[in-house]
Amino acid sequence: MSVELAADLDTVAETSPLVNAITNDVTVNDVAQTILHWGGLPVMSDDEREVGDMVAGAQACLLNMGTVSGTGEATMIEAGESANDHGVPVIVDPVGVGATPTRDRVAERLVTELDVAIINGNYAEITALVGDEAEVRGVESIGEYSDIATTAVAAAQLFDTVVVASGETDIVATEDIAYEVSAGHSDMGSVVGTGCMLGGTVAAFAGAIDDTEHAALAGTVAFGLAGEAAANGDFGEVHGPASFNVSFKDSIAGLAGADTADAGRRIKEVFSTTEAWALAYRSLTNGRQQLKPSVDTAGS
Image 1 (cartoon, rainbow, N blue to C red):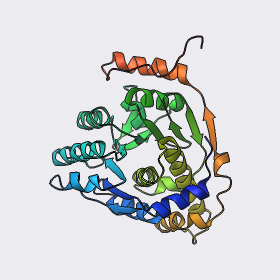
Image 2: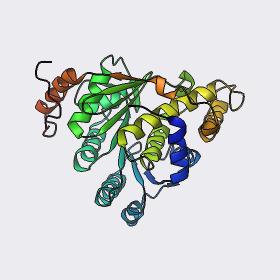
Image 3: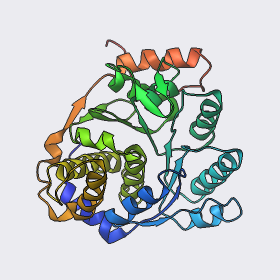
Image 4: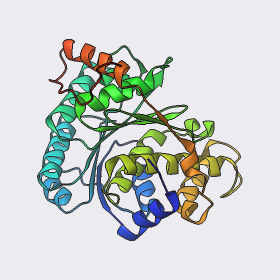
């Protein structure tokens, strides 16, 4: 898929999508600022009494379970159901799935009870979602995930969605193809909440760009390029994590004015449907939801 990032950035800014983000207590301000700096309008309604009405008028709904609670679980389900009823794309960030049974149960509800447009998670979270072995410490991904492209396609098949798996090289996957997105910088890992900010980014793009696959790709590569620009000092000198965090937000706000001509070259297609189907079937036999074949692997 071809991505013309300059045009996509203009689309987000011109559309100014309203994004209702139910996110965690740690990064709520970072997520709101991220959505705003891309050109969106963030609203952080998390009250079950009003969230359905708020989401009904939004262009995207982000559900981030970073600091999950019983009330928060009910509110996210209410928001997601309202989004589904009104044709609003739902983006789920299953933070820490694989770390505790509670998070596993809540994540399972979100991705099976709701019609989810995009799942955004780190390598370990996406791996845990499909029932494969993952190493999660708190909400952080550890361990090696050499088959993450295959795993991401399997997750897309299982949950009929687009998947963004963030890590050293980000992966964007549909039911039959995965893309490697080679953009970003190691300094992004020095700041708490960049995964949540990526979720806010993807939500803003999904609220402005009708093609969900395109929105996920454009948002992911834009986020990585902003991280590179910040680390390179394009938006202010960086001395450490705190100054990088400020520069990163400035780079998000200023990326539309930067040279993004090589964004499309940062995206590489990876075909792995046969292997992904095997993993998806294994997840099904481990008790995951009923899976409908989406690709013809005969003769593969």
